[in-house]
Length: 457
Ligand code: ACO
Image (cartoon, rainbow, N blue to C red; front, side, top):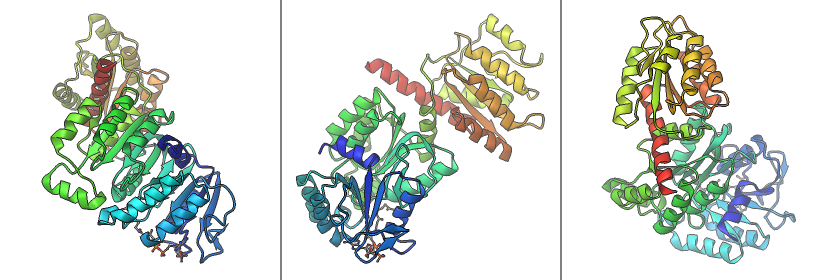
């Protein structure tokens, strides 16, 4: 079976067998089954455990072949030495793809067993995800087959991760940060299906707008680059590449058995394939938030709208550093903008509505800039004041943009109400951050990708 077809079954199975569905809460097999049920997967779910008759209210089967009905996806959560016979049973039962959660394979030198598992599966027409993974999540099919947090938010970012623990931690982090995901795939040792296969799949997948990948090493560099290049033209890929230091490379080798490779080689290869390299987890997700919005690229000419001089200056510095051109508004545009500020405001760029700025002022200034051909993108800044309600400001910003697809990024600074306002904006599809640099940096990533893309067409 082709990798693409297998991944379709992995992401949208009609039926799942959980092999090693433990009766004991807290055990991985139990928690995965629980997540599948509680996240609301609509297909058939079959727990498999020869020592149980029922797990979490579902009838339990002694083996996959005893289910007697078609199984698309088998999730395997039993000790390493028991995996191969189960793979044989899955092949016999015509299972399409198996996600092997189990550790103790190539990453600890047990390469022969890993190769045997893959060979048995491939010869029988089945494909393998893993081993050494935390599972898979797909928003479109209400599938949370992981032992990570349950309440993953739905969105349009596909997250591929070679690190399990980091991936699980980031699942929790995305929930707190209100970041929506279309999919999460833990690829672990990637003994069979690998990053390139998933990049190709998410390029095709309409529910994914941006791909974020945590990567330690690539086995087939050429194939990875080909898949990345083809996809980057269509959707952005953001990479978090670790294992770039001497010690980091050694650590990557014992973590997932990867050859991390030199930082320079990766940097050059990623650049050539249009892959954006993020330096930190939060930067990667900041960018992903930007790309998951509905904006189109109109050009680079940018304005800053603010109610605070200081943050305006900070954002101006960041724009210069990141090569974002701030326009000098024409007299016509300046005259239009004057209506939304007191006489001591500034119509230069940054457009300073002053600390007196009301929701109506923000609305007027944003709408004016959105309808001006001089402006291709807007950075909206807000500092919490006692004369404004941050959440109302956020709602006003979002409603001023409405169906517009000109890029608007926001940065709001303040207390707990401001955090709610940031959440409100993000929820409504306006990328919003808690400091100006992040907003500017995310807009810069958007420009960078579009520049690469327009050149590559
Ligand atoms: N078929 C079906 N069920 C079986 C079979 C079998 N052949 N063999 C055992 N079982 C049942 C067991 O009876 C048990 O159920 P019970 O608890 O109701 O008795 C259940 O399957 C689990 O088997 P255990 O022997 O209890 O195994 P345990 O749950 O302790 O460990 C596991 C299995 C989780 C796969 C372990 O071997 C492992 O690999 N752990 C690491 C997983 C991991 O971390 N993966 C990487 C993730 S990413 C990260 O780093 C976070």
